[in-house]
Image 1: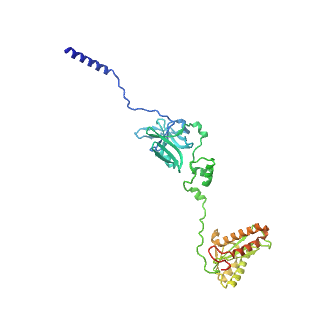
Image 2: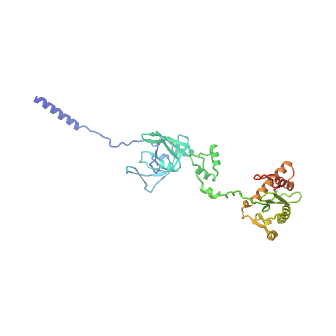
Image 3: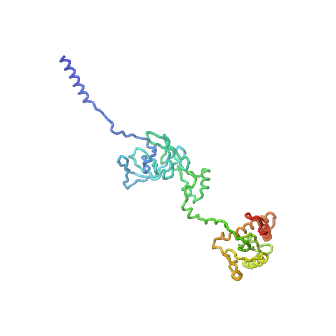
Length: 383
């Protein structure tokens, strides 16, 4: 019995000796080597990071000793920086500026924060990520080992000469001399430019400053309530063509209440004042009323001393428009436009020569006075 116990003890001692000779290896940290052409979308990164020198365009070294701080309190040195161009599987290309070259990192990172600043929308849907801009699809990625990897096509710096880069519409807007966005949409439809969108993303401050226009004038909502209270007057010509009677201009007088129009053919502009005297005598005698106000622009034909003295002696208030604001005399301006349009139609349809414009404009005025106004049930002639 004692011999058996001694044998068991000897076997245990031999096993302990064998165990002392064994070496046990434990893995404290595993450094995985990833494909350095993959790009990980990181919503927590504040910058773009690249670990592959061959992917950087126009590379330049950094001499300021810049470092990258990681979440585990570790740091990594920034060797250089420049631009990276990513060709997405969607056929579009994404240009990343100021990418930091940090070879000690294990993965290439695309900053989700910077993509949002560039107005790209990032949507996480299950095991994939989708990039859009203004509703237009840009690219996508897939979930791999808990990380979202963008679907890209392998590229290197040698392919930069044939790169087709996505440019935002505002960049093309500036390149093309701040052309309107409708033209940019047409260029995109013709595949002459490549842009991620074609809609205006905001007011261009340069266009607002350089293409400023006057605000449209609101239509006059109130009118005079009696005949001859206000007379609008303006002067016009026809392509500097002399009429058959030797006249070069015509002056119009429009009653504000009835819109009744009277025109006179004149040879020189200075005759406009004497024509008002003639119109005043004729209209006041026919209607038994007095002209109270005359409105015109600041043309020299309305500023002569004879007309001024006549208006003062007869109690007629002469109203002038502000400089460079013909809209204030819009009634007469619009009436002359209508008369010219009708005059042109008459000359073209009848085949008459241009020197018959005088007779044509007189006929047009006669017709207009007998057509009911759109806001009244009576013609200007009846009023």
